[in-house]
Image (cartoon, rainbow, N blue to C red):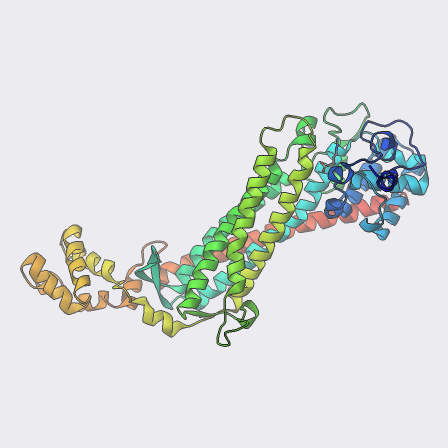
Length: 501
Ligand code: ARG
C-alpha cells in the first residue's frame, strides 16, 4: 500500500469516539475498518444513496421510540433528531466517508453533537436497519411501478373502447389464424397486465413489514417497542422473528420476479406493436419513434424495441438475485449487500419500460382500413366456415378436411363448392345455406359470430370491457390508499419529531 492510500484509509477514522456499542458500529470501528485494499470493495456508501432518505426516516422513528421507552433521554433524542434534519439538508454527498450509509450517518450525527450521537444506534444493528431501509424505499418504488401498470391498462382499455368494431387479423405462430378485433387484442394484454398489477400488489404487502428491532438477528435486551416503530414508519406489521427480520430477502426476490413477469408481458406487447407497425396497422407517435441517421424515409419503433429488451434486464435481475441468495445461511451475511442493487436496477428498468409502453400505446394511431383489409388474409375465416358446416350436421373432422382442400384452391365460395364435390360427392347446398357460407367467409361476420364468453364479438367484448374498467378502478383505489398511508406515516412521524427538535 502506498502512503497516499494509507492516508485515504484514515479518512474513515474520527477523533470522536462513542462509548460501547456492538462490533459493527460506525466511528468506533476505526480500529477494524481503517482502510486497506478492500476498502472500496467493502463499501456500499455510493449505492446507498438510494436509501439515504429512507435511513433518515428509519433513524427518526427509532430515536423517537427509544425516547418514548425511556431508553434514551428526550434531550439526547432532540439533539439526534436535530442533527438528522441537518444531515438531510446537506444531502448524501456531504456524508463522511464510511463503510455504508448507516455508519456514515451515525458518524455525521456524532460529528455534530458528540458522543451522545452514538446512542441512536442503541438496540439495533445495521442488519435490521438496512433491511428496514430497503423495504422503506422499495415500497415507494413498487408503488410507482404499479402506477405505470395502471396507466398502461388505462391506455389499453381506451384502445379497446374505441375499437370494439375494428376488425383485424389474429395470429397463431405469427400466421394469420382468425379475424378478431383491436378491442379483443387490447383486452388480452390488459388481462395479463392486470395480473402483473396483482402480483406487484401482493409483493407490496410482504415488503410492507418492519424488521427494525430484530437487531443483529437475536433481538435485544432493551425494552423496545417494535410495533411502535413499525407504525411510525407506516409498515403494516413487524416481521416477527428477529433472525428472519434481519436476514431474509425473499421480499426482494418476489418483487423482482413480479417485475420480471411484467417485463415479459411488456415484451410481448412491444413485439406485437412492432409487427403491427411493420404491417402498417399502426402508426406510432413521433415521440415514441426514431429515425435513421442515413435512411431519410425511416420511422422506427425504437422505444418498443427497448421495452422488449428490458425483459432481458429483468430476467438478469432475477438470476442475479436468486444466485446471490441461494445457499446463504442464516443470519446476516455480507453477500446481502450485493443482492440489493439487483432490485433497484430491475425496478427502475421495468417501471420506465412500462411507462413508455403506456405512452406509446396511448398515442398510437390505429389504421382501421389497413387492419380490416388484412383481417381476411390467409383464409382466416376458414375455422368459421368449418364450424358452420359442423353446425349443419357434418362431422367437424370432415368439415375441416373440406375447408383445408378449399384453402389450397382459392379460399372462396367456388373453392368450397369444388371441395364439397370432392369430399362429399355432392354440392355444398345439400348441407348448408349458401348465404350462410358467404357470411362465414366475411371477416366481420366471422368476428360477430364468435360471441362465446370472452370472445371477440362486440357483445362478448362489452362485459370484458366492464370488468377491465372495474378492476382498474379497484386497483387505482388500492394504490391511492397505499400511497396515502405512507404519506400519513411521514406526516405523523414529522409531528413526533417536532416534539423533540
Ligand atoms: N451495507 C450493508 C448491507 O447492505 C449494511 C449491513 C452491514 N452489516 C454488517 N453486519 N456488516 O447489507
